[in-house]
Image (cartoon, rainbow, N blue to C red):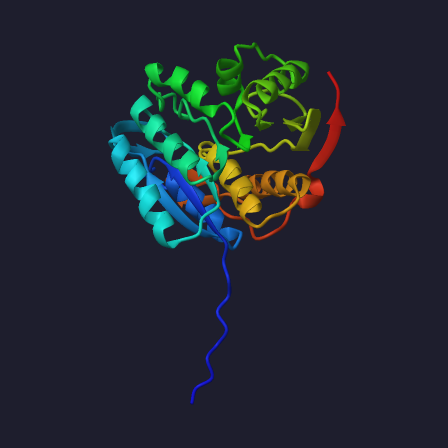
Amino acid sequence: MTKKSKMKFYPSAMTIAGSDSGGGAGIAADLRTFNAFGVFGTCAITAVTSQNPATVRRIDSLPGAAAAAQIETILEKIPVKHCKTGMLFSAEIIDAVFSAIKDHHLKLVCDPVMISTSGKKLLQDEAVAMLIDRLKDSASWITPNIPEAQLLGDCRITGIKDMLRCAAKLHETFSASIFLKGGHLSGNSSTDVIARDGRLYTLTSPLLDLPQFASHGTGCTLSAALTAMCALDLPWKQAVCESKAFVYGSLSQCVTLGAGITAMYPPTEDSIQLIKLDEAEL
């Protein structure tokens, strides 16, 4: 008899987001990130985008029922506990997705995707109010960039103090931990703000001088990394530091695809020693 090999257990996670035909963001980035952390990735596609790092040419959204059916079918057999949302696009999809998340008690990391790096709207105007409404008491983490945070929190951000105030407001409004990404601010370092359990923190890494298009997909990668950390049941401070380190490494070790196109890619070296988490005050 042949001895049966012991199979390795992989925790599962789910990404609920749009596709990126160019492979840099969306479902492609999420599944690539899950895999890099040893987390088995499942996906529910909300929209099909025709895009490359420079442009989004077309968006074909799915019916809300189609997104919900994917979630339901995955959960029939795969014991997913943690999920992330990215591009949801329409009020119909938001309603269906958040209803499914609530029904199955999934722990959610929400990346409130609204506008692509190239400037294309990825969330319809009439869907913004529904996203704000459905997010309340629904997410474990929300990971907005500065333009998204300004919209969600009705606040203006010009510096770190504004980021701290806005993160605190979002933390209170949505009863969720906030990972406010500071990539849109100029400075000597890349500084994000964390609001959790009534406290504020800054999360910093060195600033990188990046080639064109290399940062495409940073938001998707960050939220997917955080979701993977949650699926691996890591303490939250380690989770946010590991997530930022993964994004930093993916940027610093970006790859060339040819014709002047570069892209993030899972790093081969660990950058955790470059990440600093400090408590902050308003």
